[in-house]
Length: 214
Image (cartoon, rainbow, N blue to C red; front, top):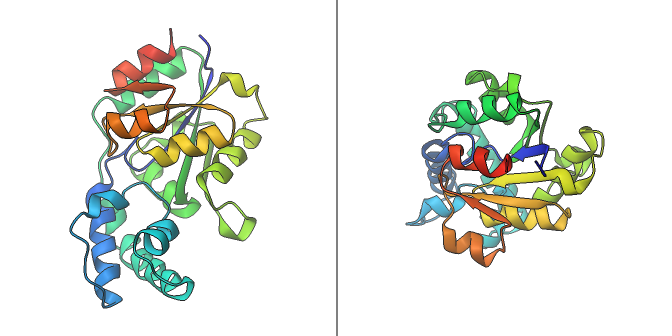
């Protein structure tokens, strides 16, 4: 088994948080007086700042306001408009039994990650849980992944695999010099993962566990 340290994205990989995220983006756009984009699904996964500033062309000041509005609704309602994907618990149990060390590496802030994992009783599976933390310079996906690896004791990067559902996860993993598996049960497509040069692609959590144990 090549990969013994497995890093998981959270939104769109462990849980289907899309409904809550999209509702919070809609709320933020409306509070900002902006037109609500037709395709809100594209905002599930990437960091909030990237979505508001790069995808929507907001200034730094407006981006900060929009993120604040987003989180206003998210911590009140959006965080619970969410569910664990079918097969996730079984996958985590299987990998743990196989001796893998599991961690969460998410662009969601630390508070949000802890709340979600506690709410769904998933925290017990993970040795380390790392979210974004701007106050400590952990902003990009690459930052989060590198911090997670450090918190795991800096294992050989050849043994570390990131699993995520968007090309941001693949890019972040490769910038941190680790491999990445694309999770097709989330919000990304096979084409998206292929274009990003994902090292592995799995259609289901069951297939992901099987590929890791080969």
